[in-house]
Image (tube, rainbow, N blue to C red; front, side, top):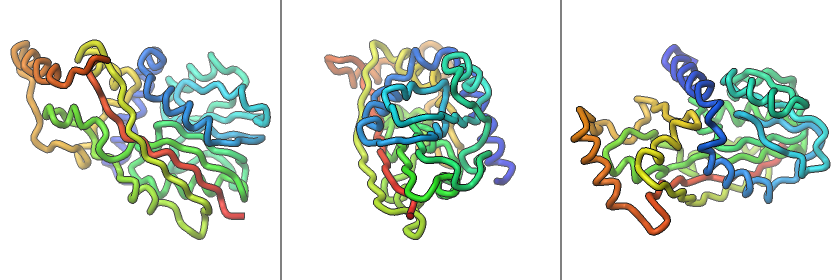
Length: 256
């Protein structure tokens, strides 16, 4: 990891730490994605929650005996420990997991791995720590997400396509790789709360090398802000102002 990648990782960690206390007020997308992941997964024994944030309730799965949460943000791990005292929290990067080889039965990762500077490395690390036959269940923000903001000239990250995500899985290491990409739209009463939903879960960091708009809108005062709000209002639907994510749901098994 070079200096620029380290700086981006640090920025992401700081933003997620700062968002820990407000996370559950804004995690609508995460909760929708979690429900879909829960329907697809059949976890057992020792589960790794990768990019765990403030934690997920896995009590509906009787086969899980132990939960390890790994996150780059200490603030998130502090909240995890307070809300789920039985979980083991570890600070670490998905691209260099602080875990032994072949030590995990199931990996769960919800809306987290898109922040990795090198997704393929993170996928290989997941494979390393999984036991043979172990499951990876993940959701990742994918290409064409947040297009409403991009159309307004705001900076958003350019996320990986489904094909690029699939290329990260070495066929010698994984079997039965299934990726299902779906559009998920969440709605907001006003534009300010729409933007706050992104900042409130710590996801407002934009990588300058991978931003969708190289020439972006500049807000110089209240007039510019109101003009931006008026443009956003043109997208309003009966349910509210829409914000669309394309989420790739992944289910893969480590080769036996």
